[in-house]
Image (cartoon, rainbow, N blue to C red):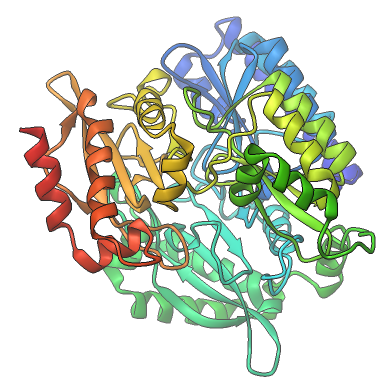
Length: 551
């Protein structure tokens, strides 16, 4: 994990002090809300429906126990005792008082955290595979590159005021756990024929009002030329991106308007002008890489007798092991996913007590390492198989033992109209209704992988466009309705969902999902996921069943 040096720490202290003065001026009436808005957003502070919301950056979703305990303390001291993990792998506090915001930033800075570039038309938090450094699938550790991008992009003078917000994801495995193809830039680590490390560069993906799966504009970019190439991409965007229309300002609109080939041509021309002088020196990359040196692992048997015995004797643990425990690159170790999707709870929420417990577990059993996933769950990436039964018991006691990773109740949902001033409809109650409908764990496992994603408005913070079943809240004359889409994917086989038909009222959504599942169970071939069956059959059998049932 990257450790902040004295320059990083001084930077955060200065930024926090600067914001404290700005808040004092606002509270004294020396700044109007319009004058203050830009200043607070530069520090991750939003004004939502009921209170201020502070969005805390968790770079590439990686933190240690000390940092998680500080987030728990902030939740208890300044919020209502919980925080909300987001699809950007950040944490949001939804009940912040303006007078407390500077103290919170000071508290974050004391553990090398901040809220910089979690808002605004700049390069936002760069995300990476939550299994980084733990999975045997990866070609390289994507955190190295995500951290280098963080340092390169923080307050970059040329890219602080882009036409619109900008999001980058880095993955190094064949299995994409970052939704790279629906990012402004998706970087996929590749090996050239000569073994050289490099990237496939995807530009112009995104969701929201006009969703796109991003096209590849360069099949292979040598890794040591990454930063001059990123600079070229952002310069072309800065030069041509729309600033007269917020709905047409994202880079996806520019790439679509120019065409991927012409956009790539302009990037290559700009890249040639910049040359190698625009790249991060090898020594600096080596310094960053050293911060992610492989953990020290014990030599253990590949199969743990304690782990196998616990599975044989405890059906609940066996279910958790099937769904939440993943293969680790080192024999005798496991990756443990912690679901924040207990039935009846708000997806992505964790209480202060739960955060404290997870910090304790990570320190004692997980090499002091906690990750946030873009699917609003947490990961303990380095747990000995021998310790997994104990870890599970502790999680289960705290309401964190839900064995549902990648199953139907592992739902992504944005805060929606319960919190967000932009939302048209609630998302949380819909997620809760669906989770209740599929609370039977045997049935959920029989259904298998099924990703439901819910957004309360067209901004798509819940990633509904790439849900196997996507649900979008819409406002119809003051009433909340929900449009369903099928067949989306945010993984390596990325695709956008197809609209099922007319929007449904809130009380019909969980029932409609139940009907969709029944059609899938009837139509599926051996080994097919919901997504596979939909792609084979098309929308017709699903549409017919849902709207026949609705009438």
